[in-house]
Length: 169
Ligand code: FEO
Image (cartoon, rainbow, N blue to C red; front, side, top):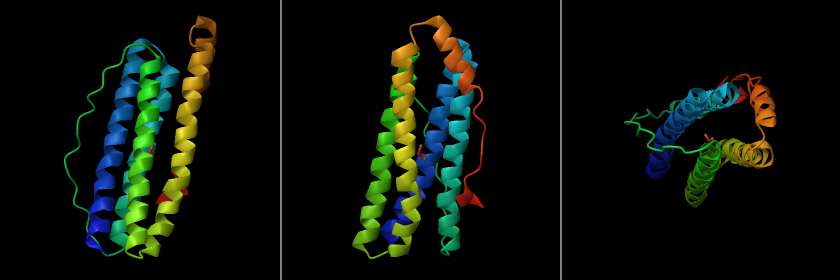
C-alpha cells in the first residue's frame, strides 16, 4: 500500500474514534439535560463511529498492514442550549466528509482503485450522516420551542436501536 494512503487511513481510525468521543459528549449533555431520547440517539451514533474506525482497521489488516493506534483527543466543546450540539454534529460530519474525500483523491492519484472502491461505502455513508444531522437541526428549529413537541421528538429518538453495519461482518 502506498505510504500516504496508509497514513491517511490509519489517521482516519483515530478521527472516527474522536467522532465517537464527540458524540458521547453530546449524549452526556442531553442525558444531563433530561432529554434521554437525544442521549440515546447520540450514544448509538458514537457506536457507529467506533464501527467506522473498526472498518478502517479491518481494511488495513486485510491488506497486510498493521494499524498504529494513536492517542485520541478529548472532546473540548461545551454546549449552551439544545441546538448547539446538533450544529456541532453537522459541522463535524461535513469535516469528516472532507477527510474521506481527501483520502479518495489521494487514492485516485496513486491508482489505488481498491481503496477507491472501499471508500465508496464511506462516501455514501457521509451523505446519509449529513442528511440526518441536517434533519435533527430542522426538527429542533420547527418544534424545539414547544415543550410538548420536544417531548414527542425526544420520545421518538428513544426508539433508535443499534445495528452493526454489514461492512463489519
Ligand atoms: Fe464516521 Fe459520522 O462519520
